[in-house]
Length: 74
Image 1 (cartoon, rainbow, N blue to C red):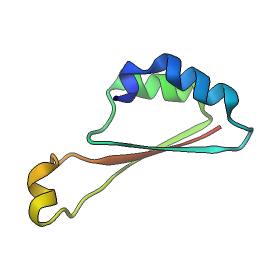
Image 2 (cartoon, rainbow, N blue to C red):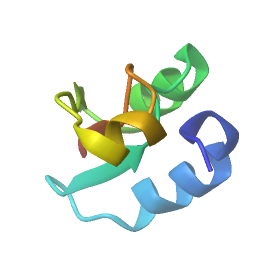
Image 3 (tube, rainbow, N blue to C red):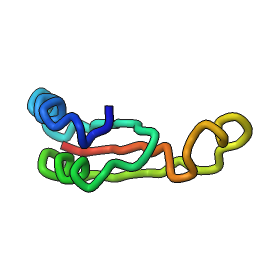
């Protein structure tokens, strides 16, 4: 599921994480602004890294704008 559709899950993940813990998520495309707002509300630092340079079958299966790896620091 995309981040924008799981605010309750993010609340629970943030609740049980220890201080200074890092959350790493992967999605097939960058999250919508609503998803970023939820992450920014719960975590001190949010970074999004787009994976590029797909070749062969992977290049045909994945959109050119993704996938992305999201890291969030509590």
